[in-house]
Length: 391
Ligand SMILES: Cc1cc2nc3c(=O)[nH]c(=O)nc-3n(C[C@H](O)[C@H](O)[C@H](O)COP(=O)(O)OP(=O)(O)OC[C@H]3O[C@@H](n4cnc5c(N)ncnc54)[C@H](O)[C@@H]3O)c2cc1C
Image 1 (cartoon, rainbow, N blue to C red):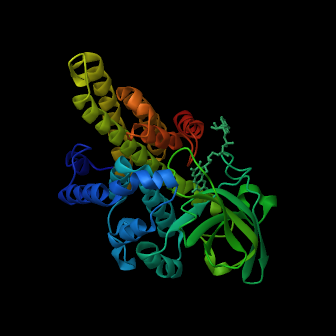
Image 2: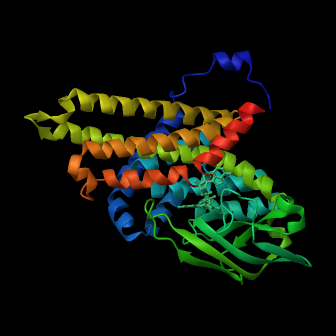
Image 3: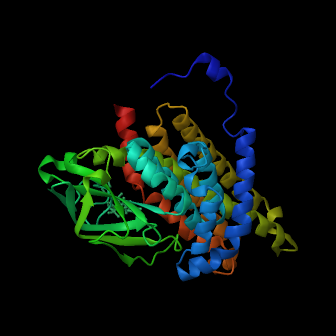
């Protein structure tokens, strides 16, 4: 890992300063989210279904391959730009945010880091143009203890035969390609874990029950079922027995994406609360004129600013090739706290109306809860941070 040079340091701009390309990109994503996503948010949340036509638009606009090199048909952007997009999407709808988050920070990223040239050429052009990807590590008995997998694979000539179940898999309903982690040799413990690329129509593979959730309701979360599912050796992502590395490294980066999602949720919640505080009158004046409300909003805005600085810094560290694992865990830990606190207090700004579905405040609160749970619970982030600061 190269240290940053003095020349580079002196040319570094403030974290929230964006290059022209980043600024134009952010404005375009914001406009897209307002125009295309916003009108669908309430019905998608109510029905618990993501509008497929919207996913087609994500592909058309290049949002599903933000950091994939142009040679594979991607947008050729940076990881930082992907975090900007996740934040802007999540400001409007955290479910839309997680659709592009999983595609960009977990699935495409795993291909770029671990895919063979043949795998990249075969799958990346599809992942950027029409195929949703999913990332399947968790199982009913394997959550925080992520490497205690029960799913197994047995070698059979040039194939592996996979059996077992995966749980909680985001985007599974819409996905055409799955990165599935299975143990090929339990005697080796986590060193038997192997990542397989499984196409949806593979015999022996099926998508099971969809969860009915508290928040990010439009984002699908399903079980995966493997029953004598034959996968060619050519579909091993990375090396046999190195799946744990694929998982650790992609999840390290994915945490910045979840931080960005939570940052977007917090921003969205605060913006609605500010607008309401300006318009709602009590005691003959807008409640925004009461100092208590002003201070509450000011405190929440300050927390969001801290969350933004941490998120942007971690993403820029990653793009610069510098160490970012501790910062990424801190981002996820902190941003999910901020999102929950901001969404909860913003709901109170709406008084009784905040407790109803007439305003979006309650949805932001429901959506904020997932930040502390997936891609490693808050305790798991603290464990990572503690390990690194005590090393
Ligand atoms: C909506 C949703 C989407 C998801 N998407 C995906 C996906 O796309 N792919 C995927 O692979 N997984 C996904 N997950 C799974 C998610 O990553 C796990 O739910 C999460 O890692 C927690 O695992 P668990 O649910 O088994 O909880 P558990 O691990 O059982 O944790 C329960 C509680 O115990 C605590 N705990 C556990 N171990 C310790 C410890 N050592 N020290 C202190 N506290 C501890 C936890 O912090 C938590 O509070 C998703 C989950 C949800 C809810």
